[in-house]
Length: 147
Image 1 (cartoon, rainbow, N blue to C red):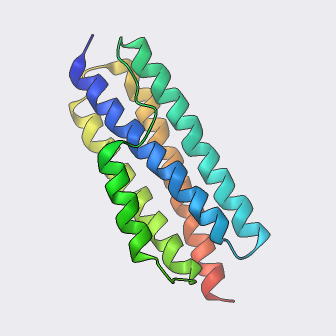
Image 2 (image 1 turned 180 degrees about the vertical axis):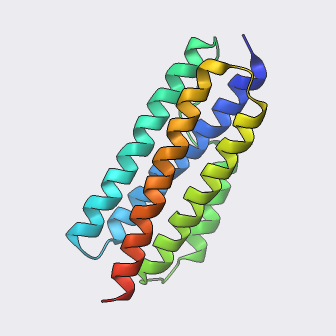
């Protein structure tokens, strides 16, 4: 069992749970069906990542968390406070966009010190998917600004 790799995957998994929750909130605030559908697709990608990461953690002999943890709870609370009274969908979308960029940065950092080559394929797939999510979010932001 490689505890450093398991710890890193657990950290990414908690961030995936945060993304799932964040996109759930975004879906509730979406102002049209197209945006709602796109956000649901992105949320589904994060759910798939969470499932795949959990499986990988168990395969490595670890125990996967099933929630966002204390750090995630604090982060979500701060985000919720920041958006009190906000009805501007673009601000939510821009925050989600930043989270996707941060997710790519985090996964790249973990890839740099990863010693479990079997995790590399999964981590690279996550980066690819998050890049696609960034494109989708940018399109939603642009279409929201043009309305």
